[in-house]
Every structure is written in structure tokens, then in C-alpha cells.
Length: 383
Image 1 (cartoon, helix red, strand yellow):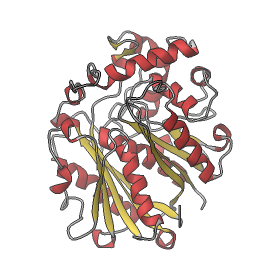
Image 2 (tube, rainbow, N blue to C red):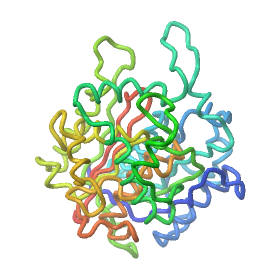
Image 3 (tube, helix red, strand yellow):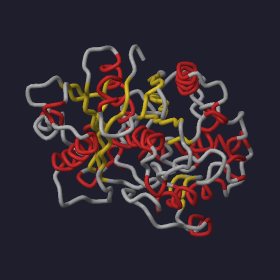
Image 4 (cartoon, rainbow, N blue to C red):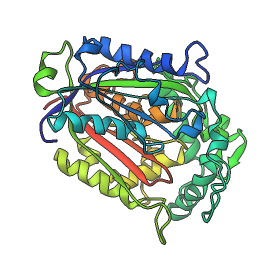
């Protein structure tokens, strides 16, 4: 970062399968108002707005940022929309941080949302595109072969996916904003229908309505705020071409490169030892083991063993997704920003019942598209 940037306010909605009590504009405004209240600010204190949203086809509303200008308080202010598929929430927050770090603005509102109940994500992600392989049926149809490949390479036992969901649901039960808050057992997960082998219904993220917003500020303004800020030590986005020969989608190179850049900029050499907790983008349970290796927490073939030992469980050596993560809450456009916001709340010591004791350094991570976009940041309790 060119100059220090901090998260000074966080606001999120309660997430559910259908928020019929609000429109998309109302949903977004709910998160924005909570973030402003959290930071002790008003709309007049915001210099610019950076908004993120997953593909328009998910809800069938083209260019929603046009009619959301008023809802997010961007009337007569600079406003920019970011789009990197499922990782967009994280990319949006990092874009906002860059605007402050560059000195262009001193205080930026960033917000992301999705109202899946007003669209059909499953079939929106099942197109037949010319000259490209079909994506089969939804995101699960696309990613299932890579989960199978991970199992084949690592020889992970088949209970690892269900066990990951058990941990996630335990965490979601402690998060008052989570969509799914009911604990489950391995047996209950194993008894659910197989949707895309090896991904069962019980190992799949929900379809959620929800939004999240953050206020990012320069060092001078952050120190004047009413709350202890979360300092952004490093933030990067990387991408790779989707259709190239020999691309490894089990452990994408762009993800590895993004992680290395973030660790290097934050001064982290041993992520397993130096990061206290991580919010990873895990829409299907097998991806937690895959990302533990892709992000350098574990050697290749060892990620599932950390889960099996309970190291990633709440109270373990490296709690992963203490909020319950994407497996418990998935408003797609907001899911990436939720990972970064939850990481910020952890180092601020304000994560409530899912607070990781003593968390000072946290990673927020998201991926999108065909595992081709990556966005991550490291936040700390100290500048």
C-alpha cells in the first residue's frame, strides 16, 4: 500500500434464502447504513463509492449500479462498479483500498450484494457458449471434476468433505448474521443426495440474499474514528486465462502467485504460524483442503490432513472460516467481501460469538470465474 489504509466500519445484513422484506436497493442500503453507523459517519463524510456485484444474469437485472446510485449515497459523487465473477466482493474492497492508498480519496464506502431469490443462479451458470465446453449444470457441475482430481491426487478419505461442512455449520451457529445456523453431523451430510459426484447436497453452499459494506479510510482519519481499526497490510488481485492447455484448476497458479504477493507485502514468511485465522472462499466443502495447499498453509497433499486433525476447527491451530464462511452464507456478489470484512472484524476483536481469541493477523480470500480470479488481503490489529 502506498500509504496506510484501514477498515473503520463494517455493516452486513442478516442473510437468508429470501429477504422478501426488502428490494435489492433496500438490501444494499441496509448494509450501507450499518457500516456508516459502525464508523460513526454520515453519507456526507464519504468521498467515493466502489460497488461490486456478480454477473447481472444471476438476477436478470442489467447494470444495477445505475439505479442503486441513490441507495448507496453516491449521488453527485465518484462511483465505480467492479466485476470479477464470484470473487467480485473481495476485488471490490481491494479496489476501494487502492483508491485510498493512492491518495486519490481519504474515505471510501465499498459495498457488495446479491439477491439470489430474485433470479436463478443454477441455470444462469449453465449456458451453452459457442466454441467452449459446456459448464454442465451450475457451478457445482463445473467444479466437481476438480474435487475428484484433488481426492485422486491426495488420496484424501471421503469423510473430509462432510467433516469440513460439520466444522462450518458449528461456526455458522455462532454467527448471528449467517444464513445456515443449524449444526449437522457427518452422517447427516453423507445421507444427503449426491448432486455432482463427489459433491453432495450437504457439502454445498446455500443460495442467499444479503449485502455487506465497509468504510475504508486513510491513517489520519482512521485514528480519529470511534473504534479500533483493522489495518490493511497488503491486498492483491490476480487472474489467469480460463481456457489454456495444462492449466491446473486444482491448485491454480494465479492463486499461488496472489498469496505469495500478499504474504511478501505483509512480511509473512510462514503463513501457518503467522496468520491467526483465515476466511477462505469455500463454496463446496472440498475446496477448503484445496485452498489450504494452494495458499501455502500446507504442503501439497497435506491440506485434508489438517482438517482431519481438527487444526482448522474453531479453537484449533488455524481456525478457518470462523463465521461459517460461504458454506453457511452465499450471496455470491457479497461473499468475497464478507470474507475480507470478517477477517477485519477478527483483528478488531469485534466478531462476537465467533471471535477467535487473540486474533491479530487474518487473511481474507476469494476466487471467482472458473477458478481464474483471485483476490486476498491481510489485515492486522497493528499498523
